[in-house]
Image (cartoon, rainbow, N blue to C red; front, side):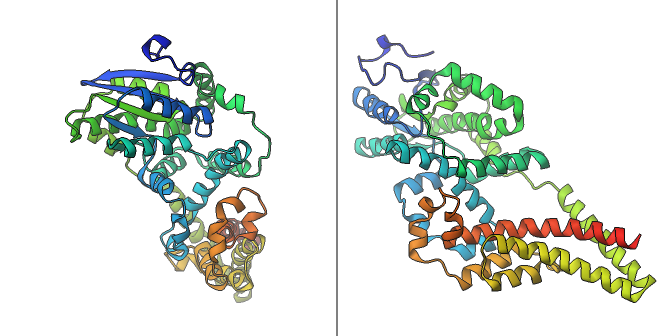
Length: 410
């Protein structure tokens, strides 16, 4: 049920705040919905901590995001070569893109993104009560969201992420505060779900269920002598879903959380389509050699020029070093015979080796990527951009080469 003024001590800070109180298994969960860039939300956290006594504090953070808040400079120690070798370049780039929107709001209103979460973390430390990190790892959420939508919807998702980088429209702080009203949130999310129900499920609904399970899990295994009151600080968009899950969720909490934290297996059909395309192309090249050596040599040349050319073009657009462009041109045509690091990874590793990121590139990374030109100016961002564009160019080159070769032979 929603909190009324009579439920709390008089407080101007809490009068219009979205708060739900859920009682389950002997625990009272005080769930505060916040806007991640809002002075009012920070004040609400401080007010609740000052007027009520809590046995534990839970926040909508995973371990990696919490570590980032505890040590904002930690990303400067990122091993770019390891990120590329482990195939995490795309995930790192996506995380950086997602952070630009909050940073843009922070620059407008002079408040750090997630300040209300930080206030809750500091409150737990000052009061010497357990801090529960209840959100799912951001990397898992992004992977599940990516795998939940179809091939063409992924382009829309990428387009929306890129638009968030280049968008410069000023957002009224009053509009941010309105986002904490339940009716507006329900309306906004209903529209979102109608456009992409799988994406909504991965980004919102699954996390609602995961966080509810984590709260039940922490409360059940807590060493704080059965906590009876827990403050839960989450984004307002999760307030309704999390509260409902807390009330009705059944089954073992640990099993539920583990299932929702499972990284989905990669779809096999894109790989088989790519293999089929390569086999068809090389079958056509072999047939061309059978018909005429010159015709076969021409088909093989076209494969090299199309795949290498488009990959190199991606490196050129990314502003890569000439050696990185050459690496892309060489690596792309032999991709079918060279399993492991993709052409984009090889080109990006050459880029990172030739133009080693400087300390200042890590220090200014989050500021630089807010502006589109920063992706080319900052060496870390440019290396990630090089990885993405060369990989994209390689795929385009393979399909273009296949179509051209088959048409020229038949």
